[in-house]
Length: 430
Ligand code: URA
Image (cartoon, rainbow, N blue to C red; front, side, top):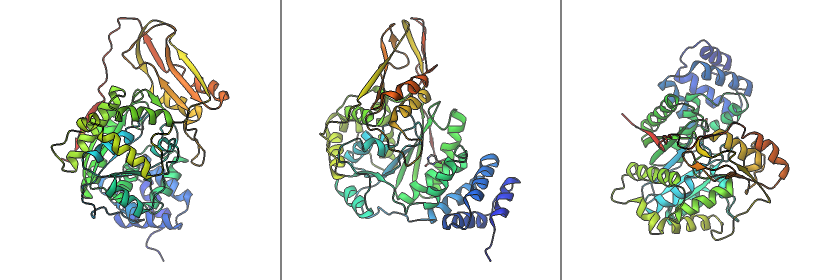
């Protein structure tokens, strides 16, 4: 006889009770083993979404998901380790320049990443646009690359937090993703199991993010910072703007191209600013002082690390990136100032062009996506290109274009525009 049964745990949360440690340990373990059915876990996830969990419950839920699989250990490395996790945004390619940049500053970056689902792109999908690059590494290959190059971005193996893998897939199809306790425990179980010594969280806020407002983003960030700190990781969160896309591209190969521009010392100002802000936080969290990441971008050492990181995983850093067979341009219909360009609409547009997937087994087009020619605050003239849509399949344009209805505002010339800062807030352990 088991200690608990699923209906007892579901009804407890349905009736707004706190789950006991023993109920949480049991339900996560039994679900991972297949003894709790998907429909029972879906009901529990919905009860959690509606009625919440307190900090003790979230901590225990996270620990139970970590305990469902292996925990990696990088303490044999001679360098400290730090990782970054973004809650996902449109055009968020920052991991690509950031990992080699931080490695060039002497801190190793072990980043286990995922593929994209929905309107935010996945880091692995972006890197897979590079000819030859492969996401799958064994734990031994990962360790060897961290020792040699100092940065690895690869797919999380099936042994890491398997409870989360199963639960996240279930939440995705049962309307139970948008729960702070479930998001925080999902992200932090993977990051703690990954074995990094320090963690910087980039919690996105705005239309293109999970968290549409600053209050919810603050709550998610502080929950994750507490979970990380309790697990012995130095953990800090930046809240960053996702009302408009980051940089000037959304789509896999387009974002790789822009990331290489940043590593070459150029690139859009917002991508450079966020990359440097996150790099500084990662170095500080790892206890490394006296190195300015801006110098490592300027002197080419971050670019050297990038080339080595890509080549170590079979990629050719010099190879031409794929380009789309078809393009279509969207123009401004009046003179004025672009005052809004909605991140969610651009993300959906890139997704409809083929840059993202609807189901996790769908392929993605490497070259599909959206290129921006203006950002909020820029003056525009009637007929000027605002966006270029890229795809390999011209029949995707119609739906992609319709997703841009109401996506941007052009106000009369001279209208005052107040830029939103890239970094909105910072949350660290109390
Ligand atoms: N990313 C995750 O890994 N888990 C969530 O629940 C949401 C975003």
